[in-house]
Length: 424
Image 1: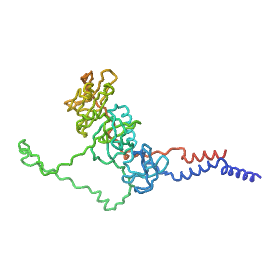
Image 2: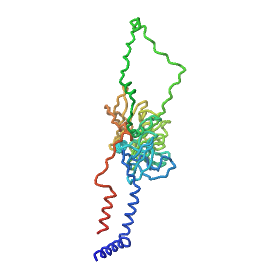
Image 3: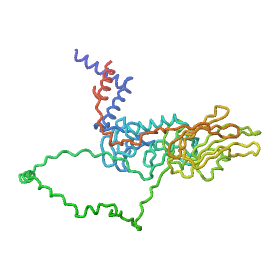
Image 4: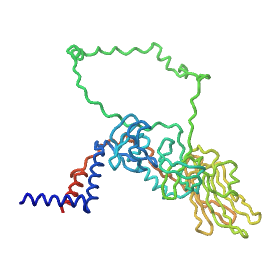
């Protein structure tokens, strides 16, 4: 009787699970079990983050290998295996795949990128620039660094920084291969006996020449070797000019400066004389009959591969009499640095420039525009803050194994909860 009641109850439960409201739940359990069987459970060697906007993981090293997963910038990944310059990583969903080490960011590099973004948000804009074409934003001022944002053609960004780097840079440090297994060497008896024999003593040092005092006189100094006129000079180092930009949604990164153009009005930009405009600021509104014009401050540079931001600056005013822009003040042959800070809240606007003195020291100079004249009102020493650390450890430095979480696996805890739910 009891056995029959037990069978009947079991049949009712099974019938309710399959044909009742718990059928979708059973299908969900089966799906989880099938998915969990595909999860890679290899212990992680280190952690990394996806660098590009979209990163494709493949089943093997070949580019024709099937795609296993697609992740986006900033998603955490577990490093499972090293093979030359390729890494096998695992996503948060447990799917593993291979990718190039250059497409990943170490935790230190990701933290530096976040600090760079915070710094760009707090830095004053040096003007709005437009992209000539689709523009890739890089995590570092290097062509080989990952690109995590794309600016559409004609897109607007804020210019906040500048850097010059060699075009040909050292490749990213590759992760070291796993340490080889220790091998137990068995030396023969003769080899062990030979190892016990001490090496012969060192010979005595040679004596100095007899005329060493004569040779030490100043007039008898050995002349330096002459340079060979036919020697091939070293190849010049090509430099890239990079601009730190800030997007509308608050992201910051590096782009090639030649791919940007400052969005200053054409009736002002025509006076650039072939130089590149590096910053510009509207310095007050001027009403001329039925049109509104602005006074402008700008900075320019002849060559974009210098370690400073501008070598000339000019203040333009709009002439109501001649209906054109005229120069109120210009200064050439200077060495200037970002940031240029302006204040237009008062009746007489002011602006501050960071300029180098003859001795190479930096000075913060404040100017005021009063009517049609630009005057220097203050000059104080200036110390430039550091943007972000230049030493960014690669993935080879992040070699600390990730500790496993205690308390059972995720699948075990989920199975226990589902079992309790089915037996309610």
